[in-house]
Length: 334
Image 1: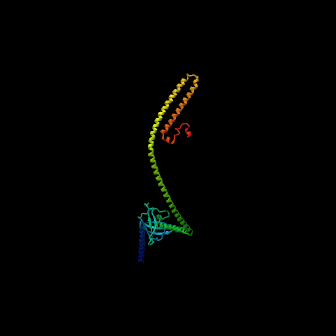
Image 2: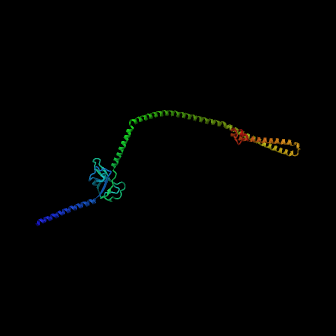
Image 3: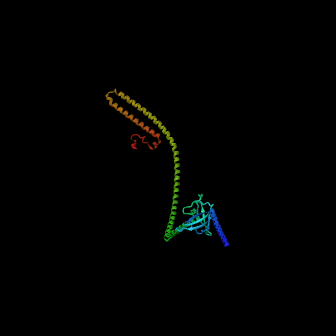
């Protein structure tokens, strides 16, 4: 019985050692994984995960930094897929890092690219409430943008084709033909009008040339008139100066005669005081006649003065006296 008991004890000890070794191995393995990698969760809603497999690559800037560990489709929203990824601990995953899906066009195998636009932000370590790992937000794939652009282009092309079909319908074809005919008629009319405009431009050019010739002829005539009038002007100036001298002498003589007549009148008036009453009427008549003669002389002097002013002003001599040079009543007669 003792050997059997001994074998049982040895077997139990060996079994315990094996279990302990397995536990230690599992512990060491799990602790090593936790020390070398970090886990993140990515929720994809807008991008297709076709070709993505467990164990697929996780790249950053074209370098493999991890792998896909697991993915789960949410029961409440089947368009939302939670993908758990494992990334090397030294990978700089920041708060502004996003995850996008990329594919190999030949094999169709998908991968996840981690993109950090601009300057990297703080390291992503915070775990949201209800989450097991930090969450990397979903980015925008270039393929999705191209697909959206192609889709919009296809819609616009379809709409353009519909519009083209409506434009090229039977009714519109007739309208287009009529419009082309109208354009052709308009072009023909414009061509004729352009010919008329050319003729009009030629006539205007000829008229301008005639005006230019007339201007040159007028300028030559003015030069000839100026040449002819210049000697006449010099002669007229000499005549005016002689007339002015004569008029001044005549004015001085008239003024001297007027003074002598006034002195005679005054002397006659003084001598008339001693005469008898019978000579009063005769003296009054003589005095009145002398005064009338004096007034006529004064009028003659004024007329001569105005004539002298006219001779001094050639414009008044040729065009007539101005209102200032006219005597009383002459402006009304004019």
